[in-house]
Image 1 (cartoon, helix red, strand yellow):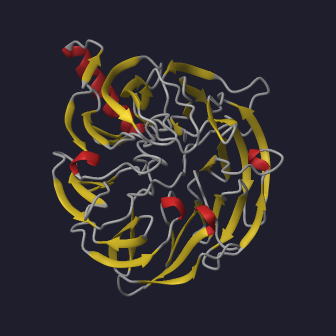
Image 2 (image 1 turned 135 degrees about the horizontal axis):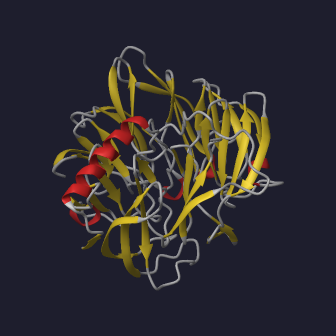
Amino acid sequence: MRYQSIPWTSAALGAWLLLGLATSLLAEDWPQWMGPGRDNVWSAKGVLKKFPAAGLKVVWRAPVANGYAGPAVVGEFAYVTDFETEVDVKVSNFDRREMPGSERVHCLDAGTGQPLWSAEHAVTYAISYPSGPRCTPLVDGDRLYTLGAEGHLQCFERRTGDILWARELKQEYGTNSALWGYASHPLIDGNKLLCLAGGQGTHAVALDKLTGQELWRYGTASEQGYAPPKIIEAGGVRQLILTSPDYVAAVDPESGKEYWKEEYGASSGSIIMTPVHAGNYLFVGGYSHRNLMLELDADRAAARPLFRDRPKLGVSPVNVQPFLQDDNLMIGIDQGGELMAVDIPSGERLWSTGQPLGKRPVGNGTAFIVKNGSRFLLFTEAGELVMANITREGYQELDRTQVIQPTNNAFGRPVVWSAPAFAQGRMFVRNDEELLCIELSDR
């Protein structure tokens, strides 16, 4: 591990920490995957209602290397990870050739884009789509957690970049990286950091977030999968929902004790979305029209299937987490690239459109869905930001503008597959060359 930081005087550091703490309390942050509530809701006021004809203002830009991981923004600090290598990362979709390089973690001034500190470690990728880390950095208090594509888990003092602890999930738990690497965003719950590790009896592990020591372990799966863990309340208890290519399960987040488990047969080991929880229902879906709608027992920790693998029900998302609206409407992008609205619990598809991605649907098409007030912002794989109204009745596009260039490649087309962060009236978005800060407020 090599670590670099800019020099600080003690007085300057003290002032910065006080300013950062005060700003964190006042400003709207995006501290993890899908924002503060992990629900892709951006509650900022005063956001533009129409994009300028000349395009959105770029506040700053900073160089980065390859990566799918979106940025996190807390107070005065922005965090992003990347993968630096001399090998061409644009390879065939399922090619797992070895690719040496360095995974890096960068801390930037969120207001100016100036670098504050960076850390890096050597790693050899042997995964498909080897363009870099997948998991958004996770900020919790004064700590920053990052998970690399080959299972390198780190905890930093987030202001200084000091490494507090690190774990090698793949080596320590005796497993292999899934085809697309470690991509399940870790979750903080109280004193615990919850991760999918893989391995025999260690599909999921709970680590002490301060020390990295294991607290409990659960389950065995054919692969670790990619779906982030989720905590819900149902049946009078808190349930940690875990998905793998083989099952959907609920466990006690304090002990790892299993509450219930339902079979789920993922296609090619691909379970990507975190389950959508809506009242007494839980939905999960993926490649090849695999889907499962569960009804949760209201009086105890139990579940029963309502429907399973119905090709014309639900949604089969690939790269995009579906959005839940009004506790009975799921908005997602299907494997075929269509945006659709789905009723919960029936799974009925109310309407579909390929419009966010262009004139017609694109297979495995991607547009990350965020809600701000009554409107939606969709960041497409073409690097466009789309403003739209989305209801049970249909989709109405309001505006569209180019914000960044798609520098990667998938299925023979240029793409940018990185979820942006929305914080402090701005959009923070990256490709494989740069991280941009873009003004979205009407100030």
